[in-house]
Length: 107
Length: 119
Image 1: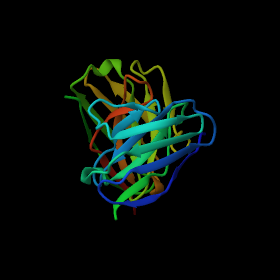
Image 2: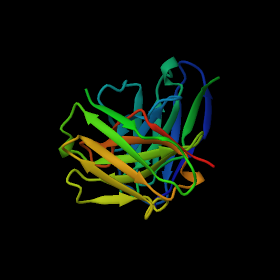
Image 3: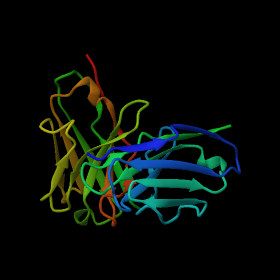
Image 4: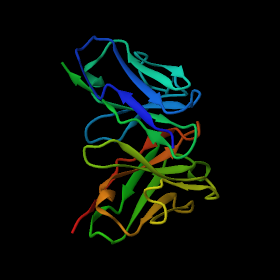
């Protein structure tokens, strides 16, 4: 199985900050990576797929990059609605696997 | 509008069984694969199972293989998860999620159904 490792596990930031979350795969997954946002008590919401493609309706302050084994999710200017937990997911093969999550907290 | 609504969760004793349902609407159900993903309390996401649009292809996580069974009924626009031999560690919120136009990317999720395994 492909292991996905996210860092940091928790991130404290202020509104307007630029935020970067890293996701590493245990083997190359090309660009087969998605990012999800989850708010407390809610289901996850797809943000980005194929490492850098923004899902329809997702604000342009979100961006993704990377390929192979190292990927990043960047929020260019953190907004109040962005305080949540973020997960990466590889879809190179089954079983689908997720990173452990990064909680973005208010500083 | 795409909607996925799970039901069937509840409290069950270890060793017991439960059947989750997920009713889909707002899209052509018969043309999409479907998944179940779970989340233990305070923990991260764990993919559980996948079924293709035609039911020809099915996958399970090793943690549930041999105990859980996924199925679908296109006449009812529903996907099911039969869970047998339940263990404490199966306690989680169970989400059904649509396999998107980009295969293996989960583009729509239900609100979840809570399964608690406890004596």
